[in-house]
Length: 355
Image (tube, rainbow, N blue to C red; front, top):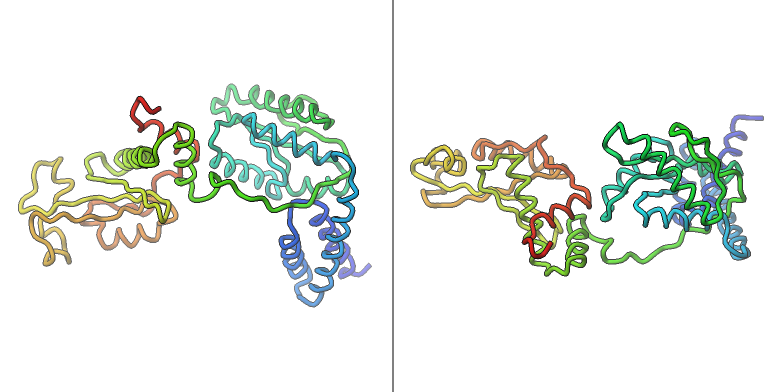
């Protein structure tokens, strides 16, 4: 068989998996097919042929799905994973393409979780391919226990809970009880319903800062102003510890950008005070190119670019004003807080009566 024909057979199988897998909508399937065909064949000559094949399979899959009576095994897995997520176990389907990709997706999901989580289970893209082809599924599991001495038992407990939850939904599993062995779902007819667009709840939109603000205000019955004040205080406290507690820093929430901005104030003086006060004081002679534009008594405010996404701005700021501020933030970003860390930070800076 010619190499080109083997490639075509492989691509047809990939199209079938993309369609029957159920994790891509039509637009995503067609984009995937176009990219995969052109990467594999190194030409766009056959692109339309495979796109037409994908469209035909999509129509056939929709017709087949309409005829499914009663819940499928995939439906049961969906419901079991939804329950696990509610129980504090991050349960992901089609998480990345490899094992390491899957754990990266788990880490990203964990960073966005508002409620506490204990562990995770998932299957990745290669597992989906095998599942669609009738080979069953293999589930990864693990705990988020920080103590290495307790991690193995905690992971085994996660595995048992995953199996029990799947069993309640009628999904058979096999496992030898070892933390080093994945949980197996024996081969079953793959009937995953096509991906549907879902309207997002307003608590799931906006920046991470904005989403957590809304959730905390709802959870505690706070005014938005009180939530913002606590968020600003949290960011400011972390910045003081990171950049120096003597600095005159102020955090301000920007509702348009949905980000917390950080500023340092410098007072222009004729003579610096003691060592503590001098951290935030500069004489005109110390202000370089700004010297001719200021006089004692003026206050200068500089934005501090503390987020990793702002590294290019931090670098430019360092070059221009790093000497004046006696602070360089390029490569010294503050941590990217998870949703849970932001929640706890806001709650920790509320008045005691509001916590």
